[in-house]
Every structure is written in structure tokens, then in C-alpha cells.
Image (cartoon, rainbow over all chains, first blue to last red; front, side, top):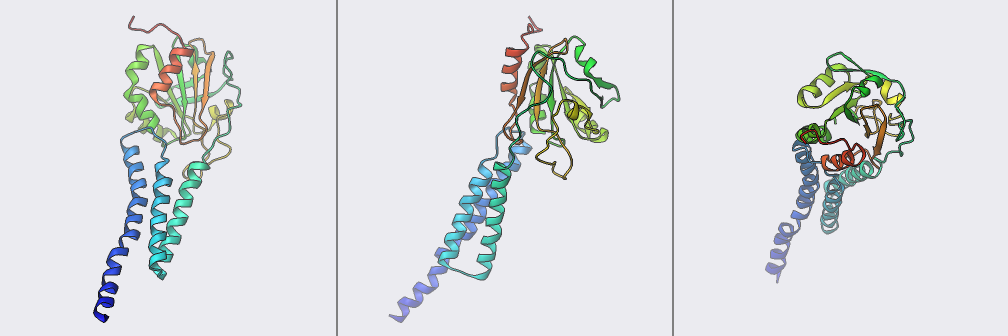
Length: 141
Length: 118
């Protein structure tokens, strides 16, 4: 009888341990996919990052419930915060609707900036006989 | 630079429509030159003083850039050869960008210039 109990106790950690590691792997998988997406210039919204992050955190939670421990709880709290941050970025990245002076059928108001060769880019530059796609970026990405 | 990379990759389809792509960002001249080198078929404008951003009200008042700097709300404006605005697009969130296919569709719809190769 004692031998059986001992055997169960010894084998239990081996069965439970992978949840936290698996959760960590899935959490980082979302971030890795996003990095690959960026590197390969694929234009897809990274909803998978917070979703995989949340799945990862839930697996870590299962691990903590099964085998509570100080380090596991600290790890869980950190990953919950990170997953929350991921959701914050995705849901909090909304933009205000455009309400500026660029209106269909109107000319653009006067402006001035420079092309990288130093030449001027102004409203007149847009009247040089070529249609233009004017793309405003955030810089760096 | 996901969006610019995709536009660079599809530059021929814009060339065929006799449409040029001008990218405006708040990057300084030095960074803009690097962007220009990376995407040689686009025309890159440095709007470090946010002169265009303010003139056209595209400055992002809600979110700052990755280093806390002032930046633009990603916005796309189609302007015809007379300088008249034909279409304005802004996504719901700054992580969203138009794909080249979506942009080409908008070009065909709102800038119905004959395709150059015809």
C-alpha cells in the first residue's frame, strides 16, 4: 500500500509540470508569429498575439491550481499582466475617424515638407500631371 | 514598415496606372533616407516638423509613437493629377493598414485614369 502511494507521488509532478511550460510556449508563440509576420512583411492584424497569450495564461493557471507554488504564482501574475497588455494594445489602438480638411472634391490646404533628396514637397507638387497615393505613416513602421 | 514593403512589392501595378506613391512620416531626414533606400519605387517625404500632418489634420492626438513621440494616424488620401482629393481612408485602429489589393481597388474606383500600358 505504501509502495503504491509513493509511486503516485513520484509520478504526479511529471504529469502536471508541462502545463506551465506549455502555457509559456504558447504565450511566446503568438509573439514569435508576430515577429515573423513583421519580418516577412505580412499585413495581418496580430489578434493571435493576445489570443495565444490568453490560452497560455489559462494553461499556466491550470498548472498553478494543480500545484501552487510561490514561483509559479509570481510567473502567472507576470504573464497575466503581459496578456492584459497585449489586449490593451489591440483594443486600445483605435483611431479617431478622419475629420480633417482633406475632402473628396476639394484641393488640399497649403503645406510644405521635403523629399529625401532635399527637394520641396508642396500642394503644387500634386498638380504635376500624375495621380498620387498619399500614405501617412507613423514612422519606422 | 509592413505597408510600405507591400506597396514596394506591388509598385509595378501602380506604375501601370500612372499612379505614384508618396509616403509621409514624422521621421527626420536621416531616417527617411533609410526608408527611401529600402523602398526605392516609393517617394518618401520627411515631415519631421509635422507641417503636413497639421495642415491635413492627420496627427494622432490619441496615441503617441513607440518612443512617445508625436506621430500620424495612418491615413491614405488619393489625389488626382489636378491636386483634387478623390478618396480619404482611415482605418479603425493604427495596427490596420490597407493591403495593396485594397488600395489598387480604391485607385481603380476613385482615380479612373486609363491604365498606362493600354
